[in-house]
Image (cartoon, rainbow, N blue to C red):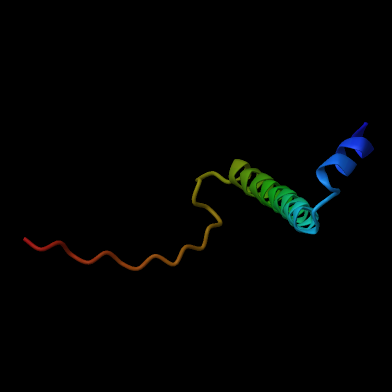
Length: 70
């Protein structure tokens, strides 16, 4: 039946196939990015659970505050 329907509508459009491949690749890229971010988040949560302060081990480069105008 699917072959009959495809034949009826004129077959598959190459632009549609290209768009489908592009979207499938984008989904794969996003899934791999999600896995990477989840593992990074797990590592950060593990490090935070082992530290006494939530800011221990973080080397933040924060500029000194300037005095407020009075």
